[in-house]
Length: 179
Image 1: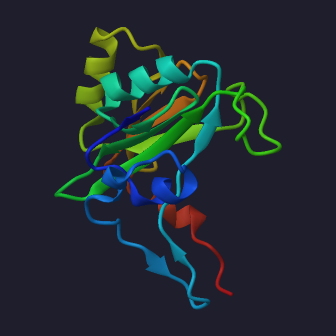
Image 2: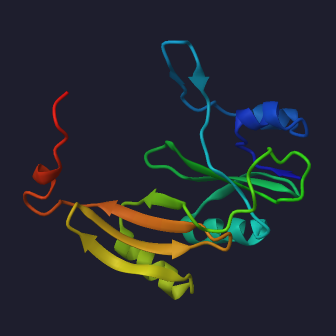
């Protein structure tokens, strides 16, 4: 088991194997709902036989950091901007007894993980150089995104987007009706 210096505090409650070192650092900002519920974290947990390869893909290509890792589970955090905590992502093998009921091994269908970046073209070039698969080429979309798509070893389609100006008048035709 490996725990990074800045481990997420939620894991200490969820996984008894985390030591007191996992409590170090500031907890992430949590929102409070009218009922008083505080959401401390929210991340996809993808069940896959390619956990290690998926971990390595996101660390190598997107700069994610391993915050917690065991033989059956890995929890990653992406780099944030201006001192903020980035996105979180987790992978789990299908053969561990703690697997929640219901999720089958992920097959790649029905999910797209969107990663917003400041410079999609630069990341596209980096992934091309590093041999990552490109499923959709770098494209400027009329709705205001520069984007491309890759796939990680777990089968997750990763849609990399950069916000750009939309074509003039594009969104006016999609205005939601007043209630």
